[in-house]
Amino acid sequence: MNAVVEQHYTGLHPEWERIELLAYSLGQERQGKALTEALLERLKQLQGEVERLRRHAHSPWRALASEEWEPMAYDLAALVLGPEIEPRIGWLYQQLQAGGQHNYPGVALVRELLALDEAETRDLLSLLEEGSPLRRAHVIRTEGQGWHATLVAGPGMTARLMGWPEPQTAPPGATRVWQAARWEDLILPAEVMAQLHEFLYWIEQRDTVGRQWGGEVGGGPLALFCGPSGTGKTFAAAVIASQLGWPLYRVDLGRLVSKYIGETEKNLNRLFDAAHGQALVLQFDEADSLFGQRAEIKDARDRYANMEVSHLLARIEAHQGPVILTTNLRQNIDPAFMRRFQVVVEFPRPDAAGRALLWSHLLPPRAPRLPDVDPLFLGAALSLTGGSIRNAALHAAFVAAGTGRPIGLPEITLAVWRELAKDGRELNPADLGALAPWLPEEVTWNS
Ligand SMILES: Nc1ncnc2c1ncn2[C@@H]1O[C@H](COP(=O)(O)OP(=O)(O)OP(=O)(O)O)[C@@H](O)[C@H]1O
Ligand SMILES: [Mg+2]
Image 1 (cartoon, rainbow, N blue to C red):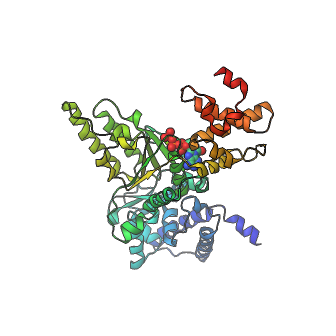
Image 2: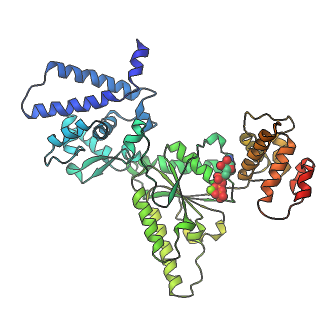
Image 3: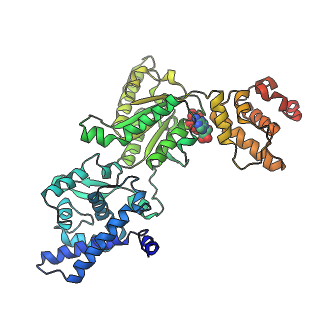
């Protein structure tokens, strides 16, 4: 019996049927008509069903929020998303609201539908405030003020809840980073990991510190990730985005910054207008192209450009939501801008222990491998970044697969050689450190 009951909870139809019946009943009551016993009985049944559905470990609601909400938050989410899923609900809202154009419920209608008393109405209003769990998860937005506000579904929320393909929401100039990344795959010194967690607190605890504790949290939060190429800056941004359950979008500032004065601002405005109110993480690469040391002011155009940079940073700061700027050249960032980041994280090149962990994580786990391919040895053998280790580990795996051999030190050494050669500089076997003896002979001759 239990198994059968559980299956029912995978669908959300009790939510929509309940909303539809609540709206229908309100229409009847307003016309002075009594509600039938059968209808009241069905409503009670549905109430029980939605309560169980919301608490269920695999509830579809978990797609919108990893944590459980208070009951009224679910009610609001269902009231707002309902008409997007069950059009009849929207038609009922139209009949129930003066003016009759709104497919979404106003505050006054919500209060009537849920039969809220005064204290409950205060709860309702606080759930609509910025920073509430529903607002933070971007499930709802409000249009208008106070009693006249209409509750509107956040962009893409219906698709996410229902498992429909996400609408194309990429802000102009941004590309989606589709990287599934987990904390346990991120290999960084404890201090750096701590800073990344602190940045996450800035995002997740906005409600507590801002709304409940009265902190002046403003926009953002804004982080600067600095470090050489391949040290895991984008990877860390992907870990943070996965933890939040939000998509990560990458913006190449080098491309966005136009040489025409004023164009850059227009591009940024378009981007932020599109990103407004959406649950997403924005990553701007090559921050130094925008926030580099202020050039010596030679002419009026330079002066204008410097003013513009401050202005652009203000625009970025005003965005409500996490923004991560990355740079390979920290020393090129104007110190005057540093204090405007809530968090500044330095990504170091990995040490031997870190490299050993990277090798062991990045060599494909089920690849056939000879016993002398020892991550500890590889980590100590030579200094590479995580990005280079990833490329070399994969290259070695492809060579092994292509030649029908297990991954051995010759495959690894060849792959590392290819990786080092990408820089375009003259190489000799000494550059391979302790791996030099395994460089296949034909490679040395050819290059
Ligand atoms: N610290 C790390 N922990 C785990 N994996 C890493 C780390 N650094 C790099 N990697 C691996 O290398 C790949 C490339 O790293 P990533 O793209 O994050 O570098 P980046 O710092 O953003 O470089 P760039 O400045 O060139 O954009 C990652 O996808 C990951 O597989
Ligand atoms: Mg990157």
